[in-house]
Length: 505
Image (cartoon, one colour):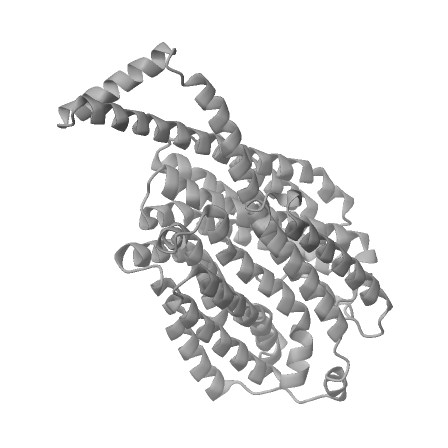
């Protein structure tokens, strides 16, 4: 529970501190998002190799190595003097953190007898639920009172305690002949193709807006490498005897649709969380702690709806829960799209709570339908793939929405400036009033005029950014709205077992 809580807490506190990192490291909006996308992409790469690493190293040893890696990379992240080194440390942190949640679940299921697993998972799930609730406020308080670097140092006591307890109490399961044989069957070619594909795609998405997309030969080359690598990965995995990821599991229609659905959920969840953070801190000028208070109710909403979904998922058709949850998420994003520069604290808090409530209704049923649709033999592969695509969806979502934001800001800026002209009576009146304010403050006429013009330009810029944020939220709302009927193409599981607790942010 400690390591899983540490990993989720790290994700939730990092979002709140991003604007402070941006200022400290002199980074643009698209550059600072690399801090998130590098971590998520590294998670996606390491997850398929987790099974082989457990077989090769043993569950206890791999647990200790992953925890120590996460701790060391947290220390490096906090001490990073530049954006490049911070992104590198976050990549390492993603490699260490990716296996922690599936490892924690596997260890719990192994060390507790069946009659105690429900209680163990409930206690474990409590830590998972607490992290996204307290994370934003704790991260905001630390950032405001100390430095954003301390949000990474926060991982160290959690990790040290987990290492001490793991060293004292964890034991490896007996090594079976199948596990010994698995160490000789690692799909290195598949992993290399996956790393090349996801890595090239992520760099292209992160750098695309800065380099003007396909007008840049570098971006074109990266996209070509990504497409060819991922196609080669699919072809290789379908032909090799012992694939890294058994893609044949996607032949199951319900699982394939569930995988696509959770990709879209990851896309919308991670990107909307980032957008709301920058909206509150950049446009509404909230400090990090206040922004954290706005974001935290999403975790409370998820906690409430997860309890409801956990009780209902075995009693009613889970497609109803997913449909209702998806519609609620679409509604929450629509509410975010109607926010303005004058929105008060509660007007921003409410959509975030509604979004969290909708997410809780979606995760449990869609996980249940997807994973119970496959056979027991396919379950490890299906579970790993399910988590990988969610992370890839989140990484792509952050890159795409920040690109939308940048472009729409330019479009709205051009439109607004076209109406703010010297011949406009409203513009002249606004400039006159601003100039009077600066004159009253002691400025001479020429300085007051220049300060008034700068102030007016900043107002136009903020309004253009606000319109762009609204566009992004409304696009995400439309994306979730069109996903509602897709749920009904999935088959209802005949006897769905109660799913294990899942991560909610």
